[in-house]
View 1 (cartoon, rainbow, N blue to C red):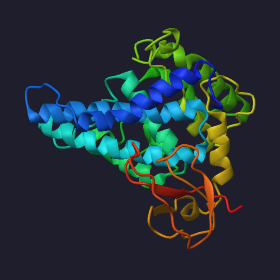
View 2 (view 1 turned 90 degrees about the vertical axis):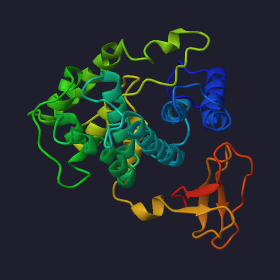
View 3 (view 1 turned 180 degrees about the vertical axis):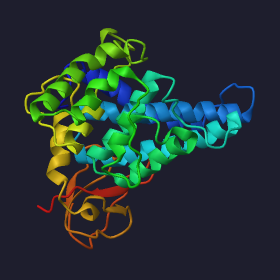
Length: 315
């Protein structure tokens, strides 16, 4: 394990990864006491979504190769869509948002974290799917950071000069600072103030609990996304919450062929391109396949169907 934050131990990682990956299978076989079937579906979907989000961030914290985060992110977006549908039925509100970003700081942070991971992995397709859930609830054009993250990626966004939560002010000021040095300094200050601002978040200080703390990583992905989108120098930023290698990854692939990087092949089909492929259905699965070669299946995997993803490496 090549951990990206010092608080994560091998034992904590193994315990949490096993738990998060098993939540969906558990609820598929377990009844949850509730007042109605609609409430049960909503609560199960909420639990599964939380596990998938935390599982994605845990893998990044643990040092998983960045390209291998793609299928985990796809799974997260699907779980948001499922949760929104069950929530809408339970609450009787068709376009309800899966995250109350205007009311709760930790839910807003989760929103911009997911948006930023999509941006830094260059997954505009997943970003559009996720943002649709939030936009449809009436949040489009209401928050400056939300729109500034989207305006360089998705078409027809709105220029906004107000925002929901003051903690994000320095990050917003960094976009419009008069000098590159000022922009860089503001991002650095934002990262230093980020963790103390979330004392009420359920994940805050979980690294201090020796057992069952649930620590999965502390990351200001939005700081990285803003630095990437607005070409802000981050060479001197060393704070642990700043995802520097993810930003470097995004910069390296900015001009590369997007189609190549999102190729996938289902087990049982033939390999479509010679090179290295990987699957979340099996750990350490990255291997070389020749074009036309049969793609194997790993049965009884907690991830379900075996899907192979192109790593972008030919040799």
